[in-house]
Amino acid sequence: MTVSTSLELDPFKLAKSLSGLNFIAGEFRPAMSGKTFDVRNPATGEKVATAPFSERADVDAAVKAAKAAQKEWAKLPARNRGKLVAECGRVLADHVEELGRLLALETGKALRTESRVEAGVLADMFVFFGGLASELKGETVPFHPDMMTMTVREPVGVVGAIIPWNVPLLLMAMKAAAALVAGNAVVVKSAEEAPLTVLRVTQIMNKVLPPGLFSILAGFGPECGAPLVEHVDVKKVTFTGSVETGKIVYKAAAEKLIPVTLELGGKSPMIVCADADMEKAVAGAIAGMRFTRQGQSCTASSRIFVHESIHDEFVRKVQEKVNSMVMGDPLDEKTDIGTIISDGQFDRVHSYIKLGRETKGATEIALSAMPTDPKLEKGFFVQPRIFTGVTNDDRIAREEIFGPVCCVIKWTDFDGVIEAANDSDYGLGATIWTTNLKMAMDATRRLEAGFVQVNQNLVVQPNLSYGGVKASGLGKEASLESMLEHFTHKKTIIINML
Image 1 (tube, rainbow, N blue to C red):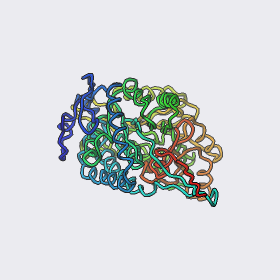
Image 2 (image 1 turned 90 degrees about the vertical axis):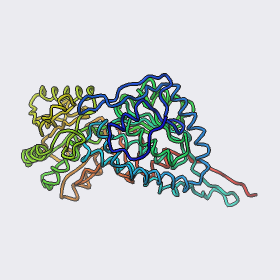
Image 3 (image 1 turned 180 degrees about the vertical axis):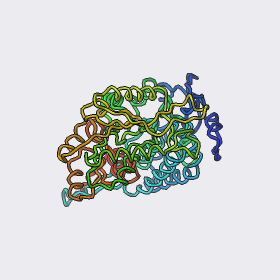
Image 4 (image 1 turned 135 degrees about the horizontal axis):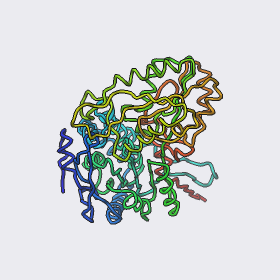
């Protein structure tokens, strides 16, 4: 089966053409069982395509093809691999609009504020890692004057990458680009809620890469993800998802004694000091909560600690700003805020809104407005919520919601707010907002998180080492460090010249 690689700006047509297919060994294939599952538009609830219900046999076919392709790929000079991976990025850059539209269709993320941006970062990530190929170098070691002692970096082999649905392009790129440049083959298991755009990316990249080197499978965790992790020829697993699933992946990989990278979410604190630039802090809260993504982000600043002297003004200004944002059809250029991904996540978010309402002392503030278009009445739209009057001990302030719900908590004592910010199972991101340099530097040292920012709330970017501590995971991504440490082995070589 083939799907045209020419630009296709009608996402509905493109989704239909990709329906029911994996990409294995350089070609489209249905699941061997012939089984499929539905892919729906979260803005309307309508079916737009199917995806293959991949199982162990499909995994085995993809891994076998990857193993064969990796042997030849690893023999290429590193810079040659880098040039090909960078070329993938340049080709993907020509498809940004197409990929953005398809991503908006299947995930419900607004095209202008989210999906088009993510498609651009996808291309940039491949170009960035392609340029790092020359850094795959070892060291000389002064072990003995009559012995030449050195280290070299070698690829691990076949990498199994399991990605989530919230930013599937970015997270696939962080894993695949680094692994490929390092000399590995990659088999991706896509999220069942968002299998289409990453499938299209794989097809486009296979115009550049050798067949079998980069494959993708759609399916569910038990039937597809588990066999991928367990496969004897998969020598490294990189996973982004929930803590619960991450533990399952970790245990399965431990049975094989293979390395694992895990990024497992967060409940990121944002500390706003009394001297903070109010306008910048408000904009930072809106960006940090990822309201345009309906809060579906592991780095979402869902615990916002605001000094009591500016608390009420801060809440009022956030409310004003988000109320001016338009919630609607993700494919409409006027839309700022799209939808929740699925009915299951929709129900989960509403369960936490209900919990917030039942929390003693809490006040609920609903933001923006629901869309009025009758075509969207079955869509998974949720008004963003702020809850004030809660404490850091309340469930709504401790558990990851993965939706547009945040808690704004008053504070007066700086040592106390640092302690509260750290009082979490998670440790992915954190931000501090102040014009006091001493206070800012103190906070960056003391906050227990892997990604700490001052007076800004950037999302993941190429060349910024990204990863968490505590229950937020293991290992780093998006950097040279991640490519070297997580996708290569270091071999020591000693040549006795006596």
